[in-house]
Image (tube, rainbow, N blue to C red):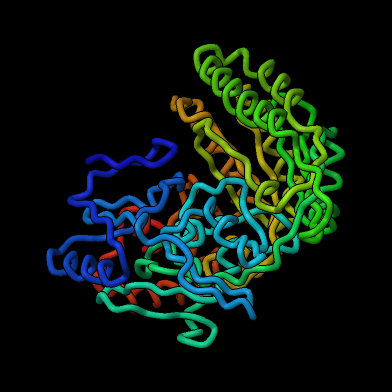
Length: 434
């Protein structure tokens, strides 16, 4: 069987596919793979744009490892099976009055896949999803179960919370949750120069601030989310209006326009100007997951770099100048977010206040001149001190990461200890870890 990731950029033909129903079945699968000389990897929802989840040997689908395993209501800590999808979490946490502290804008991933690749949302005072983990259980390369938490094997926690799938097969994760809360979302178009000038202040001052810029326009679409108590009065979007904005316009119409633009690239500036007029300019209050998450069905390919936050405005100005100089026609918006520092060894926000710049292309734009956008954008990000998102397109290798991450050699040493036979390797991990 052929496996393909969501963006259709990566594929694999595993020797076999297994769907374990419990941790013991994962242990048996790992031991069997070792005996047969095969590599073995778990694949989540396939939302990574890189080959991080490609399995040429044994592919594990963890869909049957799903749901809540344990809840400690006194500490607001909840243990989930590794295959639980992020979109399931609000329903699972609701009976306990809990929520994730922060979320990204896509919730199709498994919780294990999202944490292992460094998935993050936005908020200058809030770290990524992996930083919310206080414990994990994984199957190591010898087929043994290893529990890592703030009280067991605690020295390994900064490595296994964001382990790239290189340290073992996660079978459960324990999340430090918070009391359920609401968000007031204010979405509005603003002049791009003013947004860039105010980015550092707003990303530090607001709870959650981000913006999108459609190339070939002068406008940024800003989104500011303010945290409110869970019992705050809510003013949600009208269901019909939300469906029209998010499904008909942002997905259906935009998909058709992107497809047409692959045939007629000259229409892209007009399309972008239309898109920025049709989106944004909303003010509503709702439960946090309903504000954080947006349904996205238009396929694309993405590169995202984490920069020192102070470098973000100038890097985006340089990117804008590059697009103009090269005469490229870029249909997808550039996304800009922020995150707090954390101490996970391979976190893109390790040790520094971070801003993110993400560039995208429609997934059918595959000509060399179109993909050159990623190549040249990456040069700007690297010059600004950037670190690439592990699950998104980049060309960096182990030599680069050894310089970019102070604890890189410590992570590799843990990898060698937990997976001495290289059972969890693949071509991507060989490139980025050596």
